[in-house]
Length: 336
Image 1 (cartoon, rainbow, N blue to C red):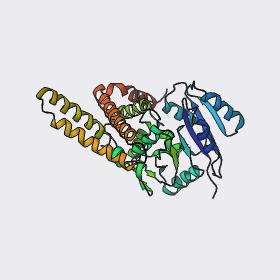
Image 2: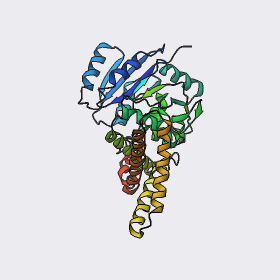
Image 3: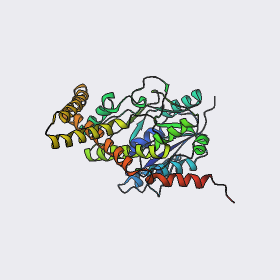
Image 4: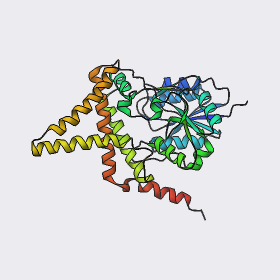
């Protein structure tokens, strides 16, 4: 059976340490059909752009474009517009892809008629990065989201990255760019599901994600994730699942019981909550092969920053994302 042409859409910004490995794994796919890679660079300043230019000069199926608005969503949409292939595969600059990644993605899309993606498989490359990966691999840290833990093909609310028909992608309007610069995947698949389309996760679609290697970068990443989930709530009217609320409830609970303890001098509710949290993250650390202290620190950073991001987004209100609705309304208006 002929294999449909595929375009891989890849947004990057300052990925100098991982971009060669990422592109090598994408160019060396075993896919038998036509395969192009469109990289949207958001103005990298760390040497990434120079490496991308070398790739474009030496590899005929790699194209590099400017993402002048820098946000990942705009880069993905611009890369998709450059393509005329019927299928798009979304990629990430922090990830290494198995040789059959594209083939398995395409086969799953064709067999199911759904958007398809694999699990997120974090693999750290430094002591702290390995601790982050251990925390991300645990249900106690990340919750039951199937794109973290699925061991068979199944329908889900979202996947890591993913592949989908270009026509459906354009009809849906592509990825939306939230002020946080995050949550575009979750929002895209949420809207995809609401139109009656389906999303499936299949663990045979294998890749390895490189998590953040420093505590500050991890905090910033998960804070943006939390902020993005609140932005999703304001513009969509609901969340795909209640999972993002758990870290926010944790932060509110600790802050409330801590304040109450300061006022009433009754500290047992605060220490009960703190002790329960430490028990959970300590269990994750004990079960992992990474450093106990680093895993505990990574899990606490992820929970706290995510929860604060959700809360700040809720307090900020819907005004921050009002422009997205206005842009969509303008696009839907018929032209003269």
